[in-house]
Length: 403
Image (tube, rainbow, N blue to C red; front, top):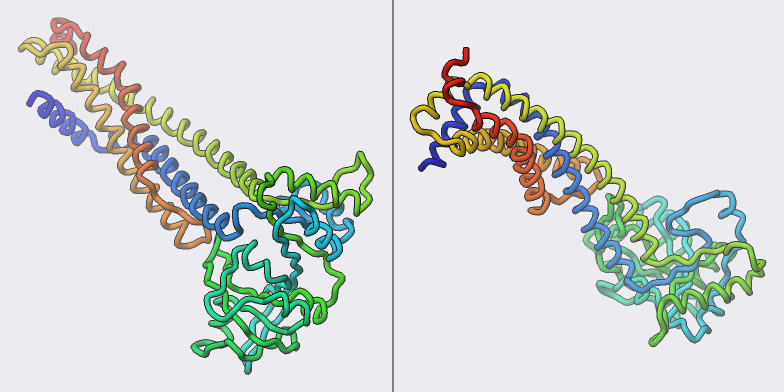
């Protein structure tokens, strides 16, 4: 009952000074809303990155001219000699390498009976691409080694291509014009959805031999592969690196003129991105809570000064020091708690708005809400304890004579 009365008294006091209480909560609101919004965006990014990693496989080694995360001089990347099919065959012959899938790509126009799509991603590869790069077929079939050997002009198409060109019709067995060249649809890939607002379902896959026949063989090849059974990824990567340095005649002290990419590269880039976000969030939240905490302390000190006679009367009729201290501490915690609640609502709304109007994902999590509540309450305790102790230590006689 005593604590309930203390809560009610604190609420009455805050309600009687609405403007002052609102301005005092502003820093807490900004800090809490920033924390929830940023943590929600990071949680959404975590979910998207997890989906992306699953979609590309967990043990892929991708050899290409360019790293997935580029740093340094772009001119140096452009001047690198291309990676060839002969390089892919040499890599496939390594004992530490399991399946390999050389692939090349371009952007071309697709058409079917008056319907068309521009700059669709055309991927030329082999039968192993389905397994290595995790592109399962929904219905129909994937390209086979026989398709590659005989340069068959067949295509496996993704969900968006089906929707745009064929609508409700079954595309299997139908023709597909790829930049004016005729291919036959043999399969439809499982739908993968969007990542960061970009569709993963606007492409087709054709035999790499048919690709070279239709669009030329001077493009650099990307070689996706997996470690052989019983070999660690690091060993496989080192074997590939040494092989390519010898084949490409890279001088001993010169850097590689090719890139070996793994999921760890994406993870490192993602970690760097979220690290920057966390640093920004920490700075904003710390500054906002510091400002809000100082405001709470100032308001509570003013409240102690304004209510000195009230404190004196309470002590004169039997209130103990801890009763007075608890009342003012509860007022400070309620003040920051309300600010935190408003901030959580604002931050959640901001995160959901960003998700609705941009490709950035966001997911409001219980962890973000819990941390925001904890920060708000801790701020109230830390910055409210001094005014509360000061109120509790007032001498009742001096407080009663205070003007």
